[in-house]
Image 1: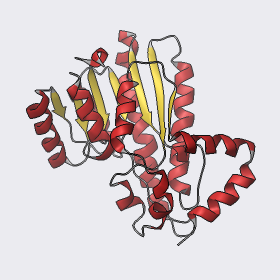
Image 2 (image 1 turned 90 degrees about the vertical axis):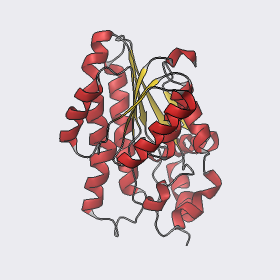
Image 3 (image 1 turned 45 degrees about the vertical axis):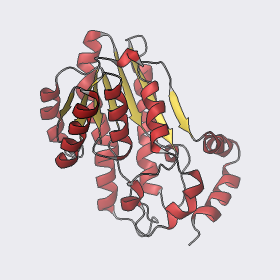
Length: 259
C-alpha cells in the first residue's frame, strides 16, 4: 500500500473501533492521518501510539460531526485532504414503538447530515486538485432492514442513496466514491446500540473481525472499487432479498426477534 504514503487521510469516528484500526493501518503505511472524534482523550492516546510505533504523522481534531456548525471550523484547521473516510456513526436498536424521535434525530445528525457536511467540506479542494477518494462507511443494514434496526437502517439507506448519486456526479473528475457495507462488527458499537444484548446475541454468528474490515478498507484507498460488502454470505442475503423480499423478511423476523 505504498500508494498512500504521504497522503493526507481524514478519518472521522477515529477514537475507537473500526476508525482507530484504519488509522493504525494507514499510519503504518506512511500516510499522514488526520483524526476526528468527540473523545479527545482517546485521540491523544492514538496519536501517541502512532508516533511511538511508526514515527507517523498524525494530527487530531476533536469534533462531534453531529454539530454541523463545527465541521467548517475543523475543516479550515485540517487543510488539504486526499482521502476522506466518513466513519463516524452510531445506532440505537429498538422497536419502532419503543424508539424516540430524539434518537432518530441524533442518528440522522451524525450518520447522515454529518457525513454529508464533511463530504461537502472537502469536495471543492478535491475538485481543484482533480483527485481524491471519499469512503463512506454504510452497512448491510442500508440494503436490508431487520427488526429493531428501523432508525439505524433508515440512516444507512440514506448514506447509500447519497453516495450512489455523488459517485455519478463526480464521474470523470478524478474523485472516487466507495461505500463500505459491513454486517455487524465485533466492536463497542453494540454497547450503545443494543443495551439489552438480544440483537447482538442473535447476530453473533455474523460478527466480523474489525481488523479484517479495516484492512479491506485501507487496501481499497485510491482504487476505483465501488463497494465493499462483508461478509459475503450476508451480502448474498441482500441479493436474495431483492428477489424474494417476503421470504427474507419472514426469516429475518423470526431470527432477530428472538429473546
